[in-house]
Image (cartoon, rainbow, N blue to C red; front, side, top):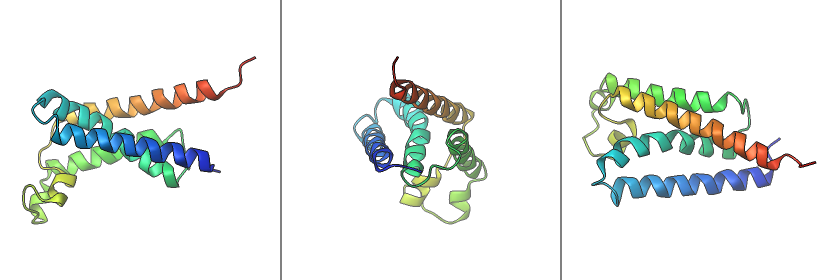
Length: 131
């Protein structure tokens, strides 16, 4: 059972990650390496935190499942789903789906998944009682 404290933790994490993503996309847009890689790495933990606000099913498998969502988005980009659905470039749906496939994005999603596993491990390690 997910406690209220867990939900609050994931709400705060989601908000912080969302603010960082927005800053990467707007304020730091000239730092191409940060926008290209940092945003893709952090999007998987952001999705994870948003889902964990409501769901605690399969917590050990969930980071991998969130990574698979990234893979699905990248697959949609490979097949130009945004264009096929008629979304104009720059529209909100076009930005959410994405427009260009990249193998580096796949690696960034894997890095984001690893980041989640590290954060979960550290949080669990910190919360275990010391003897």
